[in-house]
Amino acid sequence: MTPPLIDGKSFASGIRSRVASGVLALSARGITPGLAVVLVGEDPASAVYVRNKGVQTREVGMNSYEHKLEATTSQADLLALIARLNRDSDVHGILVQLPLPGHIDSDAVLNAIDPAKDVDGFHVINAGRLATGQKAMVPCTPLGCLMMLRDRLGDLSGLDALVIGRSNIVGKPMAQLLLAEGCTVTIAHSRSRNLPDLARRADILVAAVGRPEMVQGDWIKPGATVIDVGINRIERDGKPRLVGDVDFAAAAAVAGAITPVPGGVGPMTIACLLANTLTACCRANG
Ligand code: GUN
Image 1 (cartoon, rainbow, N blue to C red):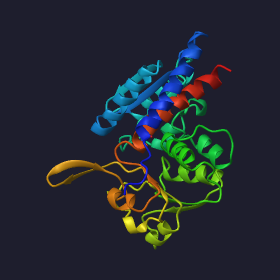
Image 2: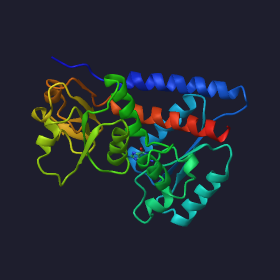
Image 3: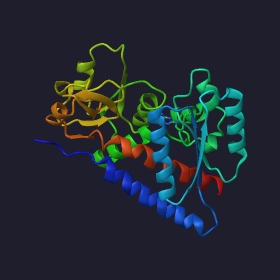
Image 4: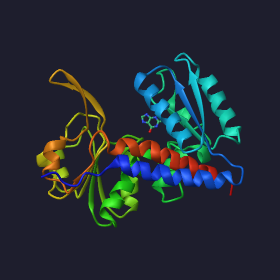
């Protein structure tokens, strides 16, 4: 029997509607939120994400400013663009699409963004604020995961949560958010031993490792809520397929609820980016 699917697509659509209402309310004061997205180089997956961000930004009534730079752009030129966007009062959110080309120091670039406009929540100030329980811009993917978990489970306090993956983009902020909710949090990664045993204790399992279908069905605690952040392109039976980090069919037979891939976490990321941009705009305008 398939457990309840957590429908990220419809959840995200609800968030976008609420953001659009917020944008409309601001328009009465002559304010339009603006999101600047910077893409360096021609990574095809990044180009698709950036295009989708632009489309959805405009759909909720915000201004979208897209800056597409050559792969050979110098770090100094990129930093100069960020300084300009920091000063631009029409820009309320700035996102630099990752990964950046190898000759650019990503940390230096992310930390050059005004923390108040850091809608990705990657600036070290926002990471520090999140870790210390202060008002922060929260990274979009983990924020979307948390919204779905709260919606499904209500109060999360006291639950055992396992986050597989320790990236700055998903794993670490996800763990901080769950800790703030009162979960007992374990962070596992490629070096962790006894991963199946750690997983079997988890009421909440968040998989963000980028390894196709690594999490097996018999790793899942019966009734657990499974959030699959992975988006992996594989070939099966000669056809291209998109799969998560969790063996969906096997896990779905055991879990209490599970996010599908596609249609789970993915759509939530851009919806949360738009919500963060609205928040940044509201804070900038009192
Ligand atoms: N590349 C993959 N995910 C993300 C994200 O959430 N934000 C940015 N800026 N780049 C990414």
